[in-house]
Length: 273
Image 1 (cartoon, one colour):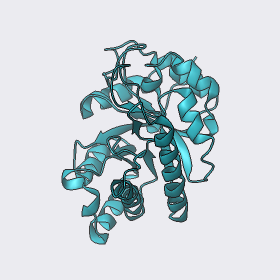
Image 2 (image 1 turned 180 degrees about the vertical axis):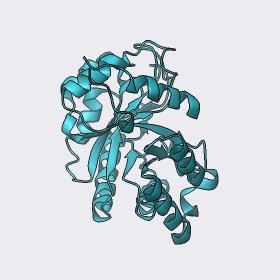
Image 3 (image 1 turned 120 degrees about the horizontal axis):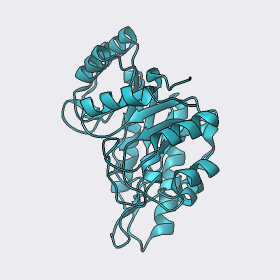
């Protein structure tokens, strides 16, 4: 009876550990895939020089660990204000340069957010920026993964772009760069009416390189709960994706490192038949 290989299930370290410690933790726990943010503390993107980066690459190679990076969704990729817009470009370029230095295999990126009154302008600004950034990434041989983000409450002033099938598709169908692929956050899909099945029915699975996992409640609010604390059907998701031929990695993104490690064992024990 086939089961999901634990080698395909990664851990989102985020900002929990300095990168060097994250690699050591992953090696100790036989985790072969991690991703990390480079926005604060010891991991701030500007802190990596050649010497430090070389040691990190050697450590990843020695322990056979695949590294990915994850940009901050609070940085508005849909920004168009003078000066600030240039800073967003610089931020994304810095992540791409860091990926080259560190040997990271992908960077998760976002489409930004809007304030309800300026949706078309924000969407166009995000699309234009992602095109520019994808061109830069392609030149540097770096892979970008555009994530579907989460819904916000209807009365919220700020709303993430690309949180529905229609908005996400609006972006990825216009972004034909070989450097631009997709990261499907399944728990975000669970929050909107079309649900996981709606996303699976429309998204181009061949472009999906990562599936991100957390528990939450159907049509509920944004939460990254430990599996079992919500009503997400993980086994149903795995069966649907594997039956459709998905061969990429999964990424646990909830709770503590130990929570994600325990869930990794549980997921790997689920029978696909």
